[in-house]
Image (tube, rainbow, N blue to C red; front, side, top):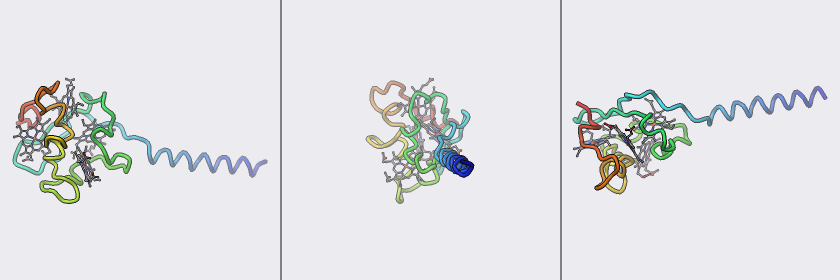
Length: 116
Ligand code: HEC
Ligand code: HEC
Ligand code: HEC
Ligand code: HEC
């Protein structure tokens, strides 16, 4: 009986650790300066304004625990498309449909995102 209890404890302990490892992060505070490789002013990003979207909408590598786009998306294309395209290229960019497309609900101008 004692052995069984120990086993149960050990299993739930390792399960707990496992859960912790895949547990979603909290969204960072607003006013986040997005990684910037170019000459345009860096983009300021507020997660609170996007809280209705699932994290995976943008963080397609979240399942691997990777959140920082700029760690993979650089100034020019490599394994991953360049960050500019990943953000606002038509038909690809994660920000495009909502903010750049014709008739977008919340259409933004360059400087609304690239805040001087
Ligand atoms: C919805 C927000 C958003 C809007 C609107 C937007 N961009 Fe961007 N842009 C980004 C993000 C995010 C990146 C990738 C991060 C970075 O490199 O700054 C980026 C990257 C870039 C880059 C490459 C990096 C650099 O700093 O040179 C250029 C150039 C650029 N944008 C130009 C523009 C221009 C010109 C417009 C208007 C026609 C525009 N952007 C509108 C979000 C936006
Ligand atoms: C509309 C797109 C979008 C959504 C939805 C989104 N994020 Fe983000 N997140 C970003 C961008 C853009 C960055 C900046 C990446 C960079 O600077 O390279 C970022 C950065 C992050 C970072 C890294 C902060 C740092 O400086 O290291 C974390 C952690 C993060 N987001 C968590 C989340 C979580 C958790 C959710 C869901 C609750 C979420 N995000 C939803 C776009 C989004
Ligand atoms: C761990 C590295 C990594 C991180 C972090 C990452 N990406 Fe990617 N991304 C890639 C690679 C590699 C590709 C090309 C192959 C693929 O689709 O998996 C890609 C493709 C894309 C594409 C084009 C194809 C598609 O899936 O629509 C977009 C758009 C994109 N990423 C946006 C983002 C944004 C925005 C972030 C941050 C919120 C981000 N990525 C974070 C590695 C990454
Ligand atoms: C599915 C739709 C959607 C996507 C995708 C999306 N956004 Fe947004 N975004 C919104 C909405 C809706 C608001 C307005 C929220 C509010 O006013 O409370 C907003 C607000 C913003 C604002 C504040 C604009 C202002 O001046 O009021 C910025 C900057 C912004 N988004 C940048 C981005 C960037 C950068 C990306 C890509 C990484 C992105 N968004 C992706 C829907 C989206």
